[in-house]
Amino acid sequence: MHVIIAGCGRVGAYAAAALSRDGHSVAVVDREERAFRRLPRNFGGSTICGIAYDREVLEAAGITRADAFVSVTNGDNTNIVSARVAKEIYRVPIVVSRIYDPQRAEIYRGFGITTFAPTIWGAGQVTEMVTSGQMGRELSLGNGEVEMLPVCVPEHLVGKPVTALKVPGEIEVGAIVRMGKAMIPVSGTAFEERDQLHVLVHQTAVEKFQKMMGLK
Figure (cartoon, rainbow, N blue to C red):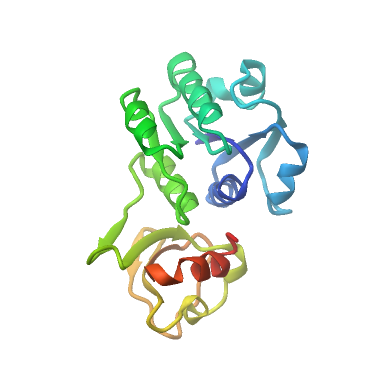
């Protein structure tokens, strides 16, 4: 599938790299040329410098043949305008937008645009929304003290043991989905490319988890 990602911040760059690794055609749009430095050196997609809702920019990115459009810039207005252009003018089947204001998010869902909040597992949600057409799965336990977060394995953890992403009592990999099959890892399990992780994270360890994932 061909995916356009508007915004090459941490979430956009991470999602673009993950989708490209999975064999999808990816085009990344950002108004700042330097933003593309966040992409890995081996990124196989294309980059277009310009405003995310500019039709010439979108058409250069391949919007007329896009299967999915993801807007994850730093501004709600840019995200929703570009998402609506993709949905209503170019009829892109899957449109996902990051919206910081939860009240506005409810409104835009009425336009058929899938929205998500800028959480630490945003990139993992984006890839699942695009590839499955559904919201990323999320499980909150108790009163929210512990959450299970779906994320793609980052490049720097590939080949390392599952214990590299473990902090006793704070962070634990509950399951790995590999080539469509789920498994419960043991201490000797090593991460592989394209692994989808479901990680249990205590609310007090959110920042620590961000750093371990390379998101901060």
